[in-house]
Amino acid sequence: MKLHSKNRKEKGQGTVEFALTIVFVIMLIVGVIEIIVMVYTYNVLADAAKEGVRYAIVHGTGIGAPNCSGPGGSGVSCTDSGAANVQAVVNKFASYSFHDSAAMTVSPTYPDGSSVAPNRVRVTVTYVYQPIFGLGWPSVTVHAAAEGRIVF
Image 1 (cartoon, rainbow, N blue to C red):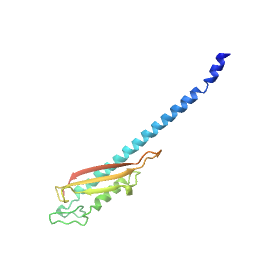
Image 2: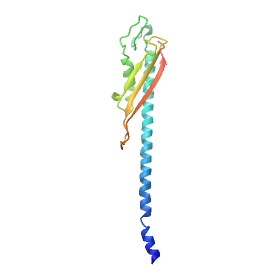
Image 3: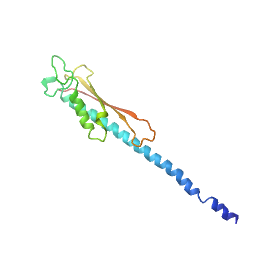
């Protein structure tokens, strides 16, 4: 009879082990999903910044470009000296993802001081990533940047 009472005491052991293991496995899966979505967010920002640079290097103020962007220089003026066209291109590209493009900060800068070829243009995109599941995880600010030389 003693053997029978021992088995009865260990009957719930498998259930307890399963409950502890499944909590760990679910948290691991949720963490992996959050990391994947954060990497996706970075990729969207990086691609949007590259798209802004592509636009800016082709639409400099050289040769009297009709859709110019940037501060101009060398006696050449541009109606879009604040590079709003570049910002619009970045926001449009980023809006194709499920991210809120209005919450992104787009900063086109011209490190050499003007938007005349062969000067450089740099586009920086910043976005505050909000975790999907929450769970008390902090929000993270994601930065991406791209740089290129103006050709026109």
